[in-house]
Image 1 (cartoon, rainbow, N blue to C red):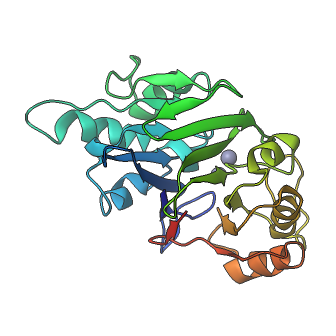
Image 2 (cartoon, rainbow, N blue to C red):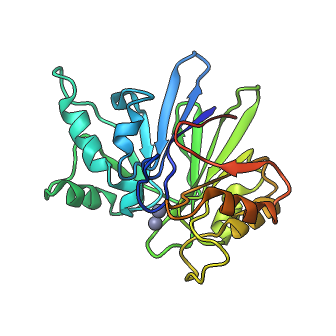
Image 3 (cartoon, rainbow, N blue to C red):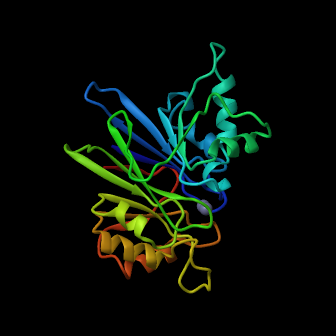
Length: 256
Ligand SMILES: [Zn+2]
Ligand SMILES: [Zn+2]
């Protein structure tokens, strides 16, 4: 299983990266490669085309309906509908309840998209996408939001686990999803030194605490907004987590 950081910028796109978008790929026993993206934030549909034709996606998984995680579903609708004269392609979208209406709102129409059919997350109910299994848990954010755990074949044999936090403050749901993961891709939108509200985002330090308690193999901080230096978030996390860690950037590949 491989993770490609398509967009890592937090809350808004930045000069070097689109908003949240993470491509996860894995081969099944027949050698066919399956492709899933976790979130499709503002600017991400363009960056994604560096790595594959978006028509090749097997599924899209959306953590929550904030624009920096789902805005480019409107762009994807257009791409899937018009990019091939032979006809539209259809890509299923797993996401929070009500996402079909949100996509219509982003498109500026009333009807639900027929090229992006939606399936509502059910926490604890696994979703199979080829050789990958996705499970989700509700997390703490101002709107319904989910952390996503992806289990699939490891590049080194056996299975690997990738957990993506979505947007959340520290909570049980995230810890349950992160437990024993090989990689925790975790948001760190805030810094401890700033006086920020609770119930919305993690700081680098709180991301590090969760990684430590959950016993993850690696911690990759993401969703750092353009107005924060990534090294500051990493330094906070390093004070709490004793394993390998770093900050995600667009174009980074991680082999699991
Ligand atoms: Zn966000
Ligand atoms: Zn959010």
